[in-house]
Structure formats: structure tokens, C-alpha cells
Length: 480
Image (cartoon, rainbow, N blue to C red; front, top):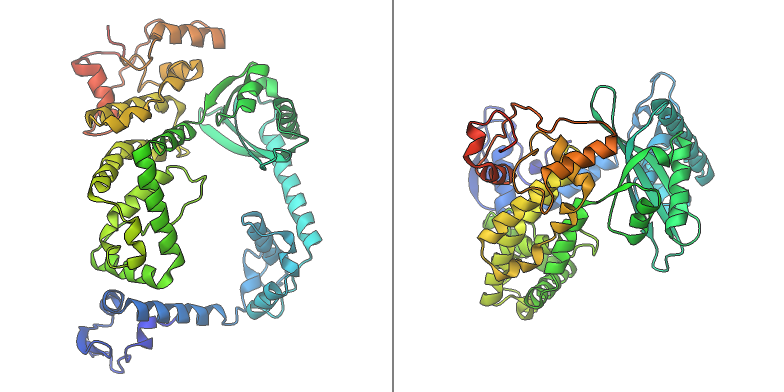
């Protein structure tokens, strides 16, 4: 695609030309056969013109004829078929909010014809059959993978409508393979028949597991949100239960947002975000101001009610862009007062450690044993602020009494026997829990030469403080 800068500038005829003139600014710019300097000038000095020309160039490129469209992932390019394009369309429907009936939409059909006049859209029923076939293939592959397989952790989450008469649940499996590597696989999504009771949910999960030749009786533990029906499910089947740590942290954010002074500030920031979303011209002016000030955070915009840590994200984006709001009359009644700005800044200081922990724990490579050290580290950092607003941030007790977490702490050499990590319980209690659960004897004092590496901030620094000077000379992680 031709660079959009030549929609504004006159492209040099002679390659030896070192400068080009800006027709909008009457300024000479260095060229040297590179458009980087010119693009930077357009972005900074003429952002509207640059955006318009870039959008036009992309639109022009989009509607050019694509003779190779049907060759995506084709095994034989000399014998083109519709199979690969149908596959792309099916994947698009599965990963978006679109229904199968989109292929019957006349505007969508017109759009597809602009891309290729040779491609014939499949019917909705054809796409549904294709997806059913792919699902069956995936299930058969999982059956082979889980053959003679026992002992796993089930991760589940569900959706219910407002009347709770329709719901469905997804199931992921976590386990350690023969090479001592952790694996996670999606088993599937199952509709719950009838109301979302623990019995009906159990039946749905059992049906999903049976498709891949697994039994719920071989499950060690269930990881889910704090829904009562899922906790009841774990108790009914005598399974260990772990409340999703990120969900717990989000509950802390929500409780913090209910503090009266915080709630008033949050209401104002939501109104500012709604105003920015509904006023495009003002939004564009704010973006220009933010660009000139080199603001790194985006403008505050409305977030979904289910978006985790939404209060922190709104406060952060509002505070970073506050200088861009002052010249708009429609925002004046929603702007925060100086005392409210001070509270907002204080809130960001308090909530930032929790947000960082949430981002850490939601990664696939995180471990359950990291939850308590991370949250205790958060509490330590928050208490150092000495802010009275921090009183709503104590949720660690939900984990300190959890035997599943206690066992994971003991089995992780980074955290085993570090003082002050087990609450009212002791490391001896953890040893007993592991011994009873696995029905094997374990050493009272395991030997390890692992030393926790410390950094200046975060959970590593917190653990070093708990160990004190003993970590510099001890031969094991246990402190006598």
C-alpha cells in the first residue's frame, strides 16, 4: 500500500532530493528516502489530515480485488477450493457475537462480493454442521489425550440470564503430565437443563467430562468464582475448592467503590467518560491535547459493568488526562474538586498494588501458591500508605483458611516454611494436610538449597523481609 503521506505531500521525482515541503505548514522537512520524519510531522502537527488520509488509503486497499483470498491455508494452490474460506468464516462466527444468520444478511453478502466475486457463501446450516464436525474431532482428540488419565483440577465458570432459567458452563482441565509439565485444556461448554442448581450444574459438568472419558470422582479440586452453587457442588462431591483470586481482588475493588466519598468521585468520572464517548468532536480535541502533552494513558471511556478493576482504570485514565478536560463547558459540573483529586490520587496509590497482582495472577504461567504471598505483599505495601481508605482491602482471610492453598504453599520451594504466610495455621498443619490428602508420609524438614531471589519491590521483597537475615546463611528454606 502506498504511504498516505503522499496524499498530502508531493512525492519527490528525483531520489537525490533531501527535503520536501509541507503544503499545510510552509515548512521544509528532511526526506532522505524515508517517510518517518514526514509521518511524525503529520501526526504531531496535522493529526486530522493524517487520520483522514490513512483511513482513505486503508479503505482503498481493502476494496482492491483479492485474487488469492481463497488460497489461505490451502494445501494445493493449483486446485483452489472454498474449504479454507469457509473455515475462516466459521472461526469468525465462533469468536464473535455474530449469529449463523449473518450469511443471510444482504449487506454482508454484498461486502463479501467486493472481496471476491467467485466465492459462494455457505448456508447457516452448512456452517453449523461444519462446526459440529470440528467439535467432534476435538472431542475425539481429547479422548486419546486423556486415555488412562486420573487426577486433575477442574476450572469452571458460568453464565446465567437475569431470570436464572437459562445458563451454561465452561470447563477447563489443569494437570501435570508425565514430564512434570503443567497442561491446560478446554473440555467444552455445556448448557444446564433447568434452573442453575448445584445438582443440574453437576449433571452438566459430568456430561462434559464423560465425553472425554473422564470422571468427576478423579477430580482433585474445583477453581471457580464464589458462587454458592459451585461451592455446594464442591462440598457435595467432597472436592477441594479454590475461589478465583482475580475474582476476589475484583470484589475488593467493588467494595472500595462503595465508600461514600469514593462513590461520589466514581459517579463523576463515569459521567465524564459517558460525555467523552457521546461527543466525538470534543473527544478529538482532547486527544490532540493529550498528544501534545505526551499523555501515555487513554481518555476515560465507559467500561462494562463486568470489567474487572474498572474503578482503578477509570481513576487512572481520568487523572492522567485531567488537563484535557478544562476547556469544555459540558464537563464543568462533572470535574473533580481539588480535595476529590487528592482522594483520587490517594486511591490510585492504594489500588495499584492490587491491580498489579491481578495482572500477575491472571496469567497462564501463574501458580495458586503465589496467591497468599502476593496478597500479603499487597497488604504490606498498602499499610505503608497509612491511609484510612485502605480499611476495605482486607480479603486475605478467604485464603488463609483454605487447605488447598496451604498444601500448594508447602509444595512450592519458593514459599515453603517462610514465616507469617499461613495465618493461624502452621507449616506442621500443612504437612499433615498433604500427608492425609496423598496418603503418603513426607519428611518433617525437607532439605532444599533454593534461595529466594529478592528485588526492590513487590512480593519478592516482601518474602525477603519475612525471612530476615536467615536467608543469607540458612541451608534450607525452613527457619528454626
